Length: 282
Image (cartoon, rainbow, N blue to C red; front, side, top):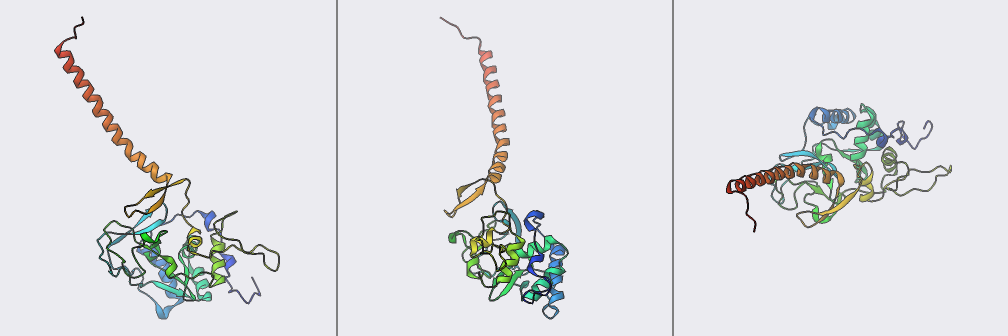
């Protein structure tokens, strides 16, 4: 790293091991978001935001989705065209400032979170330093119900808000960031991203992502086996054995209750038969 003028002092090779660390995917509270926000304010004091706030304009909660991980769910009905987010903590960085921002974060877990959420847009690295980072991408365009600022249709309370990342994320635009993010989230023998050719020293270059699907695969929640299910919008979505197991365990008490009811009915029927006396033959 020393003497390399093309990389900042804290270059991309410094952040690695996000997969192996297996850090908990936290649903952060305001005090925890304040760690990210205060670090940004230190880098950009002239653009400092109000620590402990977010840019949401509706009542929401963050839930854990079995496929997409942490995700935004509305707690109220939202009409079409409603503004949902102001972007108070939509932050953009140049290379040196972004690396300095990472260095201010207190642990690898915080750095990995930023490199999970961050993306390239309009020639800069952008990231939401509030729960806006939990707006997820819809794999099927029929599932998209919100843009970065407003709803695209009526959304009922309890629905997950899903975007189309391809409308605002740029790929292959900032090679230093692509390498930084891919190196931090790389997996051994991973086929989730395409391999880059070897560099001039004959060393294997870090595999980087080139589209929305590959971008989302880095750091995605791990799944074992999966199957397709139909949603209420008629869109097929992948679910996991974990979700199926939860459903089975939820179903088991109901089966037990039905079994008890049947047993009681049989006992009552037998008691009635005994009162009538034994059957006669012949």
